[in-house]
Image (cartoon, rainbow, N blue to C red; front, side, top):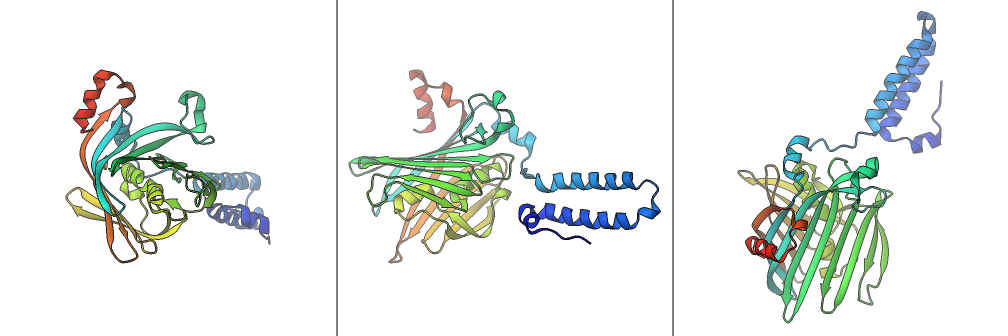
Length: 334
């Protein structure tokens, strides 16, 4: 009859493999039934064309079906960003430090090849994708010196793909550190830079989803957040605070409703003693109301960092850079 070569098995995606097998079976039957059809060539060509359409729908259906385009555009395509200000209680060096956290959500056109924001979306054409960008900052003081952290996550709006780029930085009077993850060839290429000799500069490859993109998935649609046992890369900011080796860790993700239009996502890492709890409004645009990180130490004690939202505003902040615009910061509680 026919045989599938080993190379063909390795290169075909699972759905395409099924189509290929059906095609070969159909071709075999068609040949056997040639004598019953006066126009065998036409019949065979129509059969192949039908399978081609099935092939296209099988391997190129990477869209996020959970995104309601009209609803999404009404909030996110206003040429403004959503600014969320949180009261922060950051655990550091065994004590709780009060500070501010800010989450800025905005959509951008992003280069698939260069993995940066494109300068000219119209010129980029199909080389660009629409992403949800989250910039999250934390500012607090430990004794006499300040800490500033920033996390940036770029998550595709329509393509069902991992976040192509995640970066994190931390600055304080001792020095600064920086981490960048780029999704390439079905894994994250990680570059880590630190002023600590023991950490130095590192290049790693990690094949896992990143915890940091969960915030963006909630904003797109909570249905996109996977549940159950997963391999996750813990938050890059947590990684800087804990100084643990960056790697994929076993985690359990769960979602639950907690009241009228209220829900939460919980991520638990048993081996490293970390828990993340995100509370959000369970209705579009799925606003983040609070988040909490719990770190269980080896002696069983828990250290808790929490942030509760105090204000939110849609704002074209990049145009608000005059001295007179500083009043807007005060209105946000900054």
